[in-house]
Structure formats: C-alpha cells, structure tokens
Length: 127
Image (cartoon, rainbow, N blue to C red; front, side, top):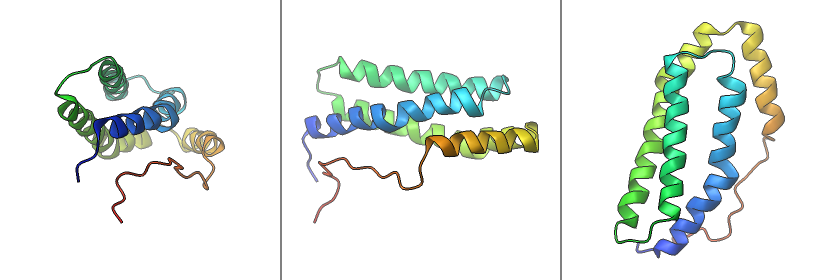
C-alpha cells in the first residue's frame, strides 16, 4: 500500500495530540508519581525522547520521512514492551494495594470505556 506521507504525518500529529501525549502525561503524573527510581526515570526519558522525535519530524522536510516515522514507531513499540515487561510489574511490587487502587480510580476518571478513535482518514483500512 502506497500512502502519501502527508496523510500519514497528519495522523501521527493527531495521534500524538489526542492520545499519546495525554497518555504520557497521565502516566507521569499519576502512575509514576509515587516512585522515582531508575526504572521510572527510564520511562520518563523515553517519553521525552519520543516527544522530541515527533517534534523534530514536524520541522523536517526531507527524503527520510518514512525512515523517521518507522524509527518513531519502533521507539513507541519498544517503550510499550519495556513498560509491560519491566516497569509495570516493578511498580506493582513496589506500590501498596491502596496506592494501586487510587491510581486505578484516577486513570478510570480520565478514560471512559467508550472512548474510540474517530479519525476520519483511516488510510490503513484497505477495503
């Protein structure tokens, strides 16, 4: 499938603003707040790096856009794997049951279960 870079980039910007950036802030302000150790700091540093890469791409006009987008996608994928495999189990061991319940309640307030992505140009659907 050959999709114009402009369409992909518009979706990346939308996804960053509507989903990923708020998610990062929520993690940092709610889930990571009780513990400041090297595993949490690694996640925060990855958030900053991913943000910087997205901002850099917004100011970049060159021939390596697909490569840069692929790099960002790989970074996000690796970050999610790190959180799932290492960071979240670590936090679950370190935080009390009460802290975890409080965090869960705060996160649920920010995320209605009916939230769905309504982006109009779903170029990834090939029907």
